[in-house]
Length: 98
Image (cartoon, rainbow, N blue to C red; front, side):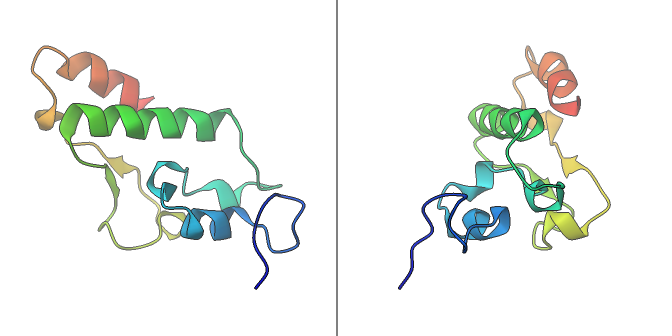
């Protein structure tokens, strides 16, 4: 069976890596929509923001209904600011909303 090892592989695609990677919840789900698809500063910031959100709340943020592929939605990620420590709430909400 062929393996997906790099962007040079004919089987490589951002969505395929997103689905196969156990850490995919930290990858920007909109990567496949970029033309050309690829990692960029937005994807880096997304990964950092999701990690920070999970550290602050103990759970991952969700898109829409939490089931539908975010690339098919026309909405922003849901941030439950009430889960943040009251002393950090305003700063974290502002940072994550950027």
